[in-house]
Image (cartoon, rainbow, N blue to C red):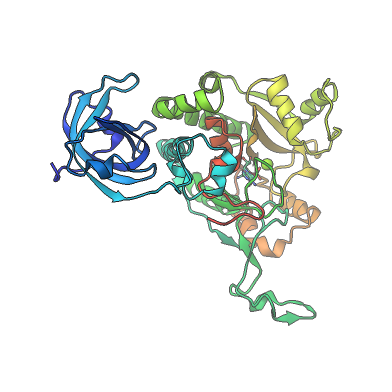
Length: 462
Ligand code: 4AD
Ligand code: MG
């Protein structure tokens, strides 16, 4: 029996008939009785634990019946139909071995802990029910992201993490440098970046879009999926300094094609979760957000509404609700405005398109009215902006004029302009924040709780 290969608990719980198996995992709870002891063992393969039944005949019964929560052990025996409610199978243990002990100082004892507390033990929280479910969902949806694009013939491109340009033009980059911070080389009183590792000022990418566009004008349809960094000091529940973004870029496409792709993509991911992550979703539905599954099922069928920015402003101006930030045409929409639109007005997903050019990035295509650009944001209830995208400016002179207007130095972006010089074509794309998606699908309310090791201002410990 000791030579049995390890079976995942997920598999063990889904057998048709009692078989001999070996499982390995971590103790979630242990109950010592006079004639029998029970251990709930979890190995992360699914939310459920397998009940181990230990009888005093076991040679190391004394030791096994006293294990604490968190202990790592292996157990072999016969899977037997369980008389207990709520579980089909239990394991009658024939042999069990302690692999790694855990005593009563183990911080994740059986009681329910707050997410704040669990954040302070981010190295252990994957062993809790909630975070087990979150990170299985994260893995499943990462796979679904690739599946969606690969099924549609998109090329996956890994854009650089270290870059010399700031795509969003917002100056919120983390610096990458090997210069001596205490004593950097200077030229005319300023730091001389030409002495730095790359011979120029560099930072961590805020978006892979610009490089993605280069690939779209070679492969037609591409996507990126990678880490993205923003040094904005916004301590909100929806912003992280390091997050993952998926950025498709499609050639021969306009803003409406872009919205269609965003809609298909979100619908696909939600449907994938409904079809493949049932047990974890049941958990979220019961414990995290009541009605979550209904909401996801509704989204999978919903018609996505679309309004222009100008229409959005009209709706906000006649709103009965008081906003902290006043609204007028030309202002940037705050998250309170976005949430009002998606939650109160539409009660579902809504695209807002054609924003004033003065509040948007230089690369967005200027509309014929010369006042707005072909931009879109997709807003969803509770999360707000989940996707941001646009049709890109493919006309060289218009783009150059916009760069001057936005004070984006052209000399650094000649390579970006080159694809408008040779074989330019209409193209569009967007970015989906992977953690925002996970917040939407799991019902988790804080972005720190859907990324394994969150980076936010003041926090990079684990
Ligand atoms: O709207 P953003 O800034 O758009 C871009 O970066 C474009 N270059 C995308 C493109 O067109 N290829 O960011 C896109 C999405 C947002 O809608 C949001 O979901 C997410 O990325 N996001 C963040 N997620 C977590 N923490 C942050 N600090 C985020 N900033 C943006
Ligand atoms: Mg945005």
